[in-house]
Image (cartoon, rainbow, N blue to C red):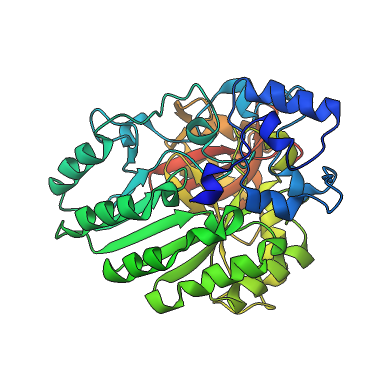
Length: 413
């Protein structure tokens, strides 16, 4: 845990690693009034040049530094709204705790507090970045959740997520894994972690042994760019070979970082080479700290994966998803012009960006064919539609909990 103890979490600490111009220092200081900032020594080593400078024109490096100008008041920027990304209050299921989320019928998610480093684009900005979050930890969070879990036999999968669950010490993880495995109806245990990016040395021999002993089933490994496959990172991945843990690569789609064919293809190929199975390519969510810098149009991911479809094995190929109020939604890789009959949807309700339900016909009014035709002309598929609403580009889709509106990028293609 040396990397965690020696993180650069302030301008003073950062100054021992890198020289920063005054305007950048001012931006970090302004950001730090409200939001967390920290980088591990390992991550800084991969970002800082040999002369002690840092190239903030490099999009990959820019992922870990806050905006240096006052934020852009776009509708999808977290600072403008403090809106939580579809984490419904009804899903925070354990009375007295903010760390337990139950979105899907058969699995529970325990969201640990804290991360090894802070990614400015974090989809969980309200948990990991915002200093004034309502999602705070309290004494007894874990015990409350264990009591709740024992009373809910329909839960078969346990997900350690966060923040980053590997912020916990090995001793603490052993206690937690023993607790989970003591519950008979828990069949699978999964971790989500960005250790690979921030501190690959966190995969200790003790942790490997714990994963084996408690039969951890899967680990979702967060990666963004091929440059993350350093010698240390590759070694850490292969330390897990003996555990039998299924390793799943989870990639956020980031504008200017991995939203081009060459980079994404290389990232997926090198992931497969090192036993990381393609799992999710996740569209950048609105209401993140850097939404105006990193979010792409939804269709960008469609075009990329469509072009890669016949050039990667199915093992390497991820599912393109957006995360919305009803959970993850697979984005279809086809997009055609089609006509929807108003009679077929006139009674359908849709969840809006304001978390209210209205008629689907109201949301699609911009696509109504002129005249009394009774048809809407749209792009997409019958259950995944690209359109605009109140002059904002959106996608409208039918998930497992009904129709939803999802904000497309404001520079949508």
